[in-house]
Amino acid sequence: EAGVVQSPRYKIIEKKQPVAFWCNPISGHNTLYWYLQNLGQGPELLIRYENEEAVDDSQLPKDRFSAERLKGVDSTLKIQPAELGDSAVYLCASSLTGSTGELFFGEGSRLTVL
Amino acid sequence: KQEVTQIPAALSVPEGENLVLNCSFTDSAIYNLQWFRQDPGKGLTSLLLIQSSQREQTSGRLNASLDKSSGRSTLYIAASQPGDSATYLCAVRPRNQGGKLIFGQGTELSVKP
Image (cartoon, rainbow over all chains, first blue to last red; front, top):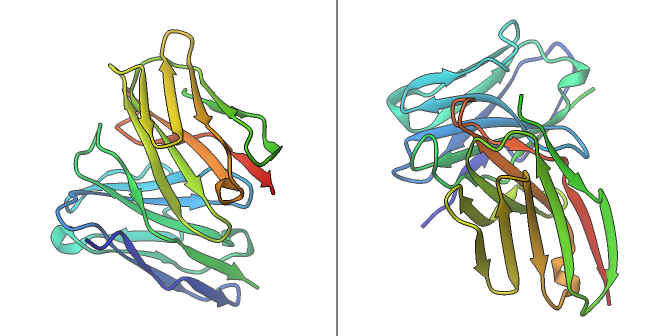
């Protein structure tokens, strides 16, 4: 069975440009997470979805970040405009249940903003 | 607010040693605790999940324990191998924070041949 799939794996952009990341969770997983990981740090939650509903987006910088999960399967995370400090790895994860299920992560999308 | 700490930040051992990685958390009201492995430039691989009602979980050479009352978990790796070299992250699921995982900063393990 396929794991969590993310694309692109790597992205290099100039500051002020837009960027988008895509995530396909494990089939049947209703809960989807986007995490941000800076170098040498543990991941930090940006947003959590239960099906189509964003149930926790308190850490998402809404002035420049947006996310959607249409139809409750794939999700897209967008940054517009990107800033130098956005350089990081963006990780997507999914789980069967919202509160107690095991999380499975994708390979991540590494963003470099020049 | 839940905080997760991992000590040491880095560890280097010779091949064959048994070793223990430590994780501590400040609030014992958790659903579960999960240990992950992360190789350089890669995503996180789930190693073990311990529910709050459990005290330990085992998988191969790995054994993880959970002591909620003291806010501690340990990951024991038996007979370490160079292929075990990676960063190990622990994460807890607080009961009062909507089910999200709170991560420690990780322990970078290097096993020398």
